[in-house]
Length: 433
Image (cartoon, rainbow, N blue to C red; front, side):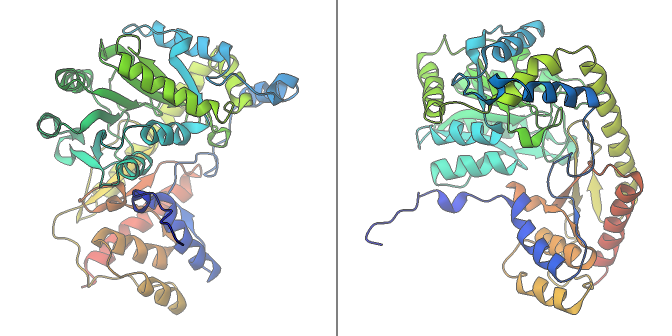
């Protein structure tokens, strides 16, 4: 073509969580059943919504308003309901005007990073959730800026690393954190959050806090919402219903904006996000309309508590299983529904392999073992040998080697068998060369 049409950051758009699916489907076509451990979709792994939540949605489907456009920022009743929830926590108070709906947090993240000035960088955690890291890298055209999460300290942020990087890189305009964290399952104590807010305040940057798993916390963890600790720092919390009802296919998320009235430049930026949403007219109406009725129902807190106990049980089972295998390190998760299995230093090399389930599958795997990281080599070998599809930790913007599993399989026997099969595969792989 006579003109280059690609955005300078297009090469940064990677999403390992779904990219591995293409190879898995090819293996599936060759006759090997796939166990999908790559994506956080509770519904596809067998979780059933309570009948009372379905009844609310069915009733809304019968109402004509569910089929209409909504206000650009979102349904007024839902926005007021969510603002009231924020204000009940204490801390920074907001109004309905500080709630903005999007078609899932993927839509929100795309706009949050897409409408920043290109030179304005956001520093985020490593390991990093791919949606955030890829969006930030694509917006800037450079590799995502990160601060370290310390596996030897329960995957807590390395605050010294964060402070130094923010202090000595004046291109950094914002700080991203994920609490509870994906992919590690870490939950940040209040004092850690307060120090991160203080770093933002000292360096006059804003905060983005992904709180999509805020109501999936267990194993005695205690934390705080961003609204409780942010004080006078500009920022936003990202929330949604995809992991919580759960209704991932509803594509319904929102941001809670803090202190936009205090900072004119930040308010203009938030208005830009609203204007960008206005070009789409509005976000999907039906899931928004369900929020006051579902979250306001007296049964909702019990629903959340049952899910917390369920994921606590599963993560503790996974922790006990993987702790018995040599060559890997695991940290007991305290939130979300993931666990990161970390390979010990020096355990992996390029000569290791697993016997493929079929010769033609082995050929396919070999064709994809080019210039890739050592943990990705393990993941591909695992896939070709067992049909288990996990995500390499290097796919989460990390220089550490490992992989992520989910706690989502609803069948107890299948779930535990899958973990033991992965553990046995690790043992064979490590001793294969």
